[in-house]
Image (cartoon, rainbow, N blue to C red; front, side):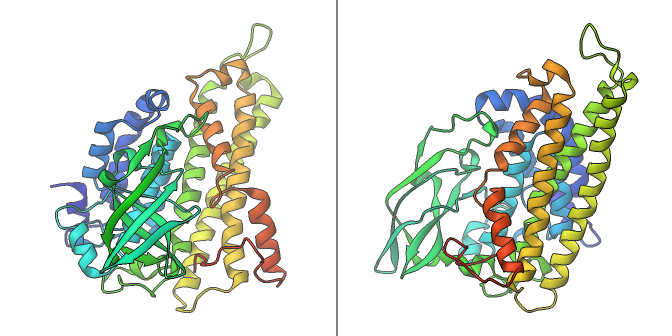
Length: 397
């Protein structure tokens, strides 16, 4: 019996899948450097994590998933991030994408989840490709970068224009061309290569408008009993903030363990130097505050979602500010801790170095990072200035 089975059994709880995530932490940390060098996650690790239910946290019990919600997903991602950020990123995205797949028409879900509780699926949010209708089918063409998770996926969801509306269409991986172009200095293990579709024909039921993906109830998955299937994506995205929280927790603990060591031949042990102690305790207190901010983010998002009315622009901005602020604060704290480790903090095999670089790269992410763009957007929405060119057409309501 897998962890997913136990969690889904009568009387089960989210404890089992969270415990499973915790058990993977030492193994993932041991593999982190190798996976970074290989520019992909370890094959057996991915298989074992899936078998443990770590990619099906929010998949409804009807399909054999854990049937849990954002709190449990947050904890799973937070724990995995203490071991490796790339692995946590893929874990979060596989869970998100399974959740998205459960919003397609029931017959599509029945086909995808017929013999599994998790569909490993990449999903890309970028410039759309094209999809032409032909006799109940769609002919898909396009090229999309940053396909996180595709190297171990069976499917991908890609953006296309269908009937003048942006939709996500499901494409089997074996009908896609993978371009080996993921040569990056951070987040390397995600293997987020570019994918290409050339005249790929799929059923037209495999397309879902982007707005339905983000919506709480305007989709085909509301027949499921779990509350998670009636929440907007804005609630689920707190899992990304949990990744930042987990990374800083790990960095604080790693730095604590180094406090009794010297950083150079002319310096005393760090715990005898006032500024080193101050640097560490600042990070320690920041980590505590980031937990509080993340917890407030999920509580506020759930309160708005359970009201049953789409959130206003102002509410969406306040929700988004949590994520942007946590990311920016964690990024700066990690840089401080790396600098406090002397030149060894920049060794290729240094875990702090890897975490700091990974978080810095996420800070440039078009959806979850990009501080200047997102802060300006949130400011405009809070000031009542409304939407502007470049704002998301279908928001995370």
